[in-house]
Image 1 (spheres, rainbow, N blue to C red):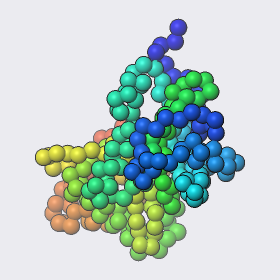
Image 2 (cartoon, rainbow, N blue to C red):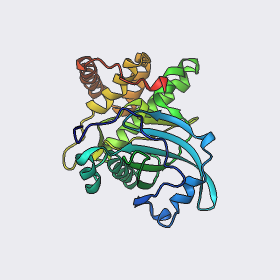
Image 3 (cartoon, helix red, strand yellow):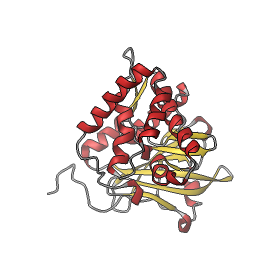
Image 4 (cartoon, rainbow, N blue to C red):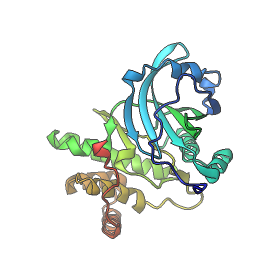
Length: 279
């Protein structure tokens, strides 16, 4: 008999079908009365854009008729296998629940823009697996990781402006008493390049530090580790522009850079299991 927490090898479903019965667990105030059954039924499946799909998560962008108007949305679905995951879902401890709470913290503090969470749905797929789907607004732009992959063709001043925006926005996050355990470029969207504007798209690792001062090394190191693993490490000049925006004091900045560089060197193989540049 299969273990209660064993996971099937089939990929997570992209979307509920038009006939799937949905339960609403969380809703933004403006969407308390939204008929999500009808909204999902209105999606033209031929136009659904798959952003990511694995056995543990599926993320798609689609246009749905939302309260009478077509609107681009992102649907993030995670299967809830086994008894433990079902207990976590009942307690509101799933990654999608944490995403919702992290997005709310960012909205309350105005520390870092993020996609608005509209609803959190649960349903069963055809094989009777319990699923949870987070519905979010779709943000324009591309990830900071993809920007790093393509930025070399841009004028130097545009590159430096983007690096400064990364440092400034990361400083704003910590200044609000928040931390992000997964502050990597693939989780940051460049919503505008002129002027540079950024938004977080995965907020499951956002939390409050309480009375403790936020530790800057981990989020700053994360900005370098993933690009190194994907062979798009930023030039030293870009790194210094980002760090200068984060820490204006020169002496403190030099000490911080040594700590960040040490953390990057101490990290294990940064090569990701699934390269975001290839999805």
